[in-house]
Length: 257
Image 1 (cartoon, one colour):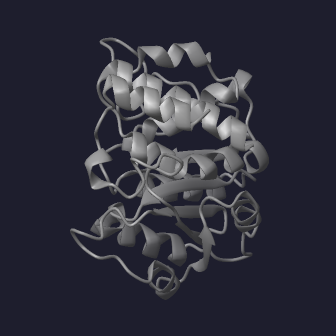
Image 2 (tube, one colour; image 1 turned 180 degrees about the vertical axis):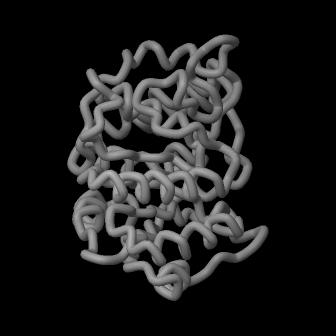
Image 3 (cartoon, rainbow, N blue to C red; image 1 turned 60 degrees about the horizontal axis):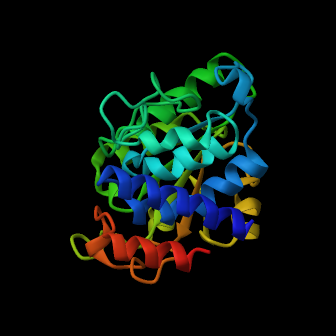
């Protein structure tokens, strides 16, 4: 799995470098979570990505789109080589994912605080239809400052949406601006089942994603490292939306080999 993770990271870095834009560090932060989710948890069919029987994943922190594109390519929704068009005019791969363009993308996201409420709506709709499909969404710790996140959390708890799982990418990127602490206690206070895990430990991720409670939504607080796997990026605010120079690209690719 680690060699595959590094291969996907190389894909992400090359696409961002070629486009001159992209949130590489954010994509690296969530890649372990996405790989476990798509490898071991989600029910889906790349040949029929709108199947009524599928589980849904919504990337609420849409700026980490390159992480999602890499995993969707790995799962056969489109060719890996397609991602080289990232950021180009008329490319289907934008800085934020578009459900009308990218196969496998369930919701167009990027405006922080919107994807999570959409996930609640999807989960409620599936409940009404008596569907067995589950909904997974991933938000950022900075995104959790949005009021809409907590309005959605309260609504999900009120309707006892046990088919909904919210994963928080707790990479501490917002600490310098506004400290967000004890997210597990906050979600628990809103009536959610909560777990705290290492967001880069595949066993912990997998076990947590399988612990759907019977009558509550599930919140997983995943402790992660922004830019994980690349020393020059790890916990370095300069890499929030930075693309590598030629020399930096060479160094990063070497480190990921």
